[in-house]
Image 1 (tube, rainbow, N blue to C red):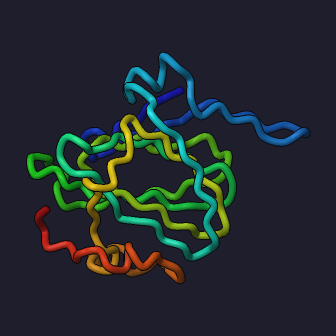
Image 2 (tube, rainbow, N blue to C red; image 1 turned 45 degrees about the vertical axis):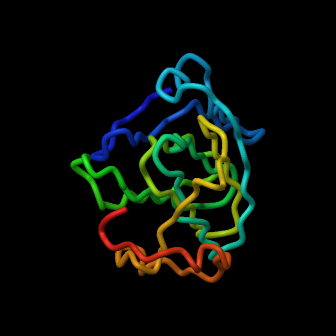
Length: 172
């Protein structure tokens, strides 16, 4: 397992063990002692099945409830999207985007302080690991339509909740 620091402090590409042979694919997206050293405690894992064109997010939990997330695509093609909301960060207000393909051996590790979204370029299944409990009373978000950098996404489906998120004004 190899972690590659991106230009965003606290946001890594994770290249995990992956092997393909005549039987199919084998991927080991989590190795305790390797990823857990960077990630910390694993509190919950959830899997998302999304149809092509679905955008989920941009969500985050405020202050002490911020979650560190680890995202991998299990099937299909997704795009992992993170907006840096940390005012003391050199990448504050910048957007990170990474296309992940099912079983390709790459994931994204995102520290707390980012608003996060997943876009399905095709029907897909993804996995998200979180280091702390979901706290809906502390959940906030940013409306994707307020980010010009996401105008190229062919979004067809967004939840009512996500459609009603506030527009990004350059500050949290």
